[in-house]
Image (cartoon, rainbow, N blue to C red):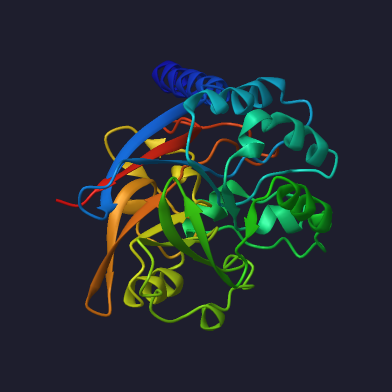
Length: 300
């Protein structure tokens, strides 16, 4: 009995230490850097700042300071893949936190927590089933219209079911995007088709990287796809990785750069692990909160 009690104490102590570290790690904001060779041969580099899943609350002052510091990276383009806020009163705080990034070209695709406030869900069910589920409680709507208008005030383009061509750093780039697939709001048919002949690069943007969207964009000939939503698994096992992606994407591609093949074509994929988490689960383990600076370079 004494041995069992000692073992139980050790397990409880280890669990408490891991939980404590997870609370701390959720504040270790990080900039990841990647390179993708997708631009026309001989072209100059183009720096893309990919931000996602802030889940911002006004009390999160350290997170807002980090967001303000991102202007120092001097990106050419900002790609925002949603889940920006966790409450309506975070909209003004987020707008102020962009700083000089407001004057950079940008595009955005909203996520589920830009439409409705977060709710408590059983984390064990999340891991077992591989994705979050409704609780049966009617969701609290957020002021998505004001959030969208604030982004548009920056000059950023809403890509929900839209194709848009923009000049960025001397390149002619075609963007396409969808509304949030996690809530079933996506309709890729509204933007499907091959990129225009006169563009240098085709980019797909969506919040949640469900395979139906990755397949459609890749088969159409998009060069790069940006997505978020997964939180990189949020709680990972050292040496093993993520336990879930919160969608039907495999865990090997839960964050960072990879490729996707469909319809005889291959696209580059970048999934952001995001900068925040639900206020009901404010921790991360072996998965630091992040934004990414993705440098697009010339193809060889």
